[in-house]
Amino acid sequence: MSVHAPEMPIEVDADTGVWTTDALPMLYVPRHFFVNNHMAIEEELGPERYAEILYKAGYKSAWHWCEKEAECHGISGDAVFEHYMKRLSQRGWGLFTIEQLDIPAGTAKVRLDHSAFVYQYGKVDRMVDYMFTGWFAGAMDQIAQSLGYPVRTVARQTQSGAQSGCDYGLFEVSPL
Image (cartoon, rainbow, N blue to C red; front, side, top):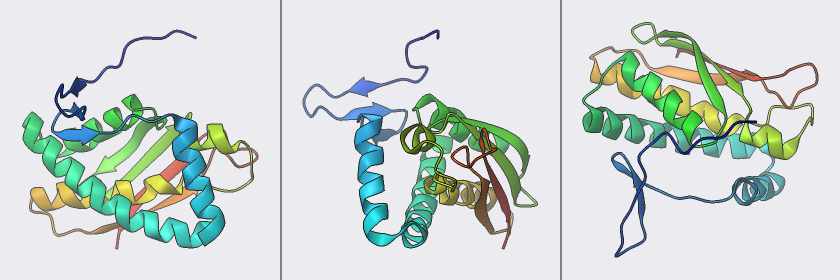
């Protein structure tokens, strides 16, 4: 295993202790802390209901993130989606690879290797990365709207590295 320093700018406000990367405040927490909280909520609500809640929240958050980052970096279109996948990967959620992206058509395929959720859950023969699903539709819809495209999308996970016979996760974005 080789290691390197973070590949994104991290600033810490000396007066408040708030961490910032690019245009947004950030939190830095251990993976097990975050995923254990996720698992506890899932246990109470059930994975299906929790996935619905996370989809809506993730969609809204991705929309906001893409809007702010596009403005901060002066980027648009595919570059925003690519930047989003890069930052997600750099922040330890897993390694996200865009396999297909067509913003005017509202389609994308994203591969996820080394998912933080799969590392914590292990092989449990179900999809455990559903937290990310709304992120892809929210990002796609914000970028499409910023370019004047009328398309609106939905995202779904088609496989997870937590399933037997699967080494990575896959997500697909398609028009509503």
